[in-house]
Image 1 (tube, rainbow, N blue to C red):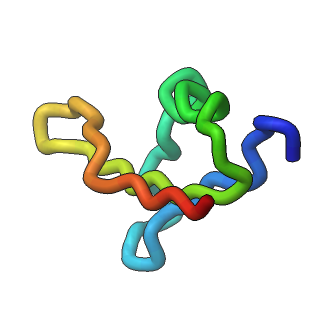
Image 2: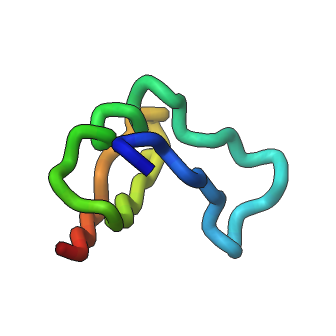
Length: 58
């Protein structure tokens, strides 16, 4: 997809009221040298967002 984001999805256990990860945070990964990757984000109780894991398929 030439570095374009395909989808951002909530975890299956999250309610519809849970906010999505902001695009400016997600877009930091569009330059990876892989066609397929998964980034698992989390939001802490204090509102800070972290990256829990990155899976890259070459």
